Length: 406
Image 1: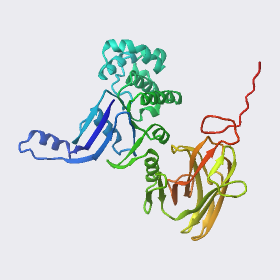
Image 2: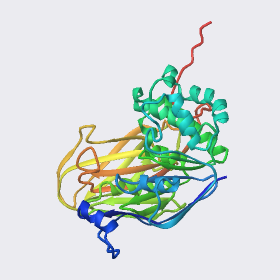
Image 3: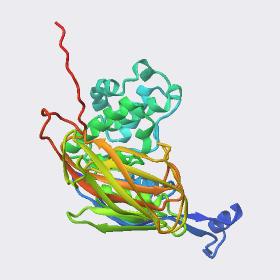
Image 4: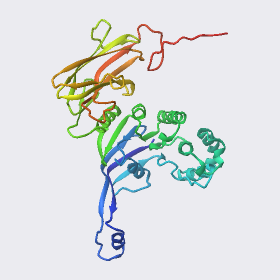
């Protein structure tokens, strides 16, 4: 079982005013410092327990890849310490360690030995590596002939040829085709069941929330948030639209869920309820039952355009369905301060058994990245039970018919 402990880690790079300053610092006596330090990571502290899966998220330049390189030992921290216990396999930069002029098979032996395998072990593992990568005859062709997806297939196959105690995966999986991404995540899930410790960097919200026990948000080289994946990803989503007069607040709701509310506050959701066909407010719906989502919105300032968006999320925070009135061509224009309007959204509750939440967005177009008046996660929580349908598996109810022809 592997674990990772990062203690007060910082990483800085030397910034010289010109190339002669670097040479002078090396050669001239007196030990005069002629550079300035540019810190890309500061005061990073966290622990990944054996068997735990932790996701790391953040905008480009937040320091995610630098952190992973320090954990894997390819670069050293400027301050602090990192302790890694257990056999580690990492998939960082695409094709890292591959020589473009060598064949895929040659690169398997080279990169495999860097991971600690012997030649004898690689001889035994080679058939499984070839079978999982599924690149056919390209295994004996130079890597420079590979597409980025083929490089990823081979690199992932080598890194996971045997279950590692610690697996670190950067954004590399994002270049693969949908089939191999599913195949790779199935292997990662299987490793998790068998006790592998996982550190995953991804912009894929669904992957983080489906696989990870905890998430860490890096922002400008520091840890901005750490905790339950859905709450961290909601905060990250709000932060993407962070602009002047834009606020992000998180509060703990009944049941321990963390609600994120962000925006400029120019409009707000005053009331929200789930209704049955008789107009009565409900908290529990039958599978396939016709329901109405009622949302009352009030403008607190004059607004040139108002768009309501909503999404229905499962218990892991993954969006089951979402749309907005920009896409349905129902934009409301010239809203006066103090005025209100009510949106009635009708749909069948064609969901699997479980609990769900509604997220709302008050914006001016089809995205919250511009004019985000209010984004509210966990605006409403409801449950779906199966009273009237045959037993089924999955997150959605499909009224299907099976025909047998003999």
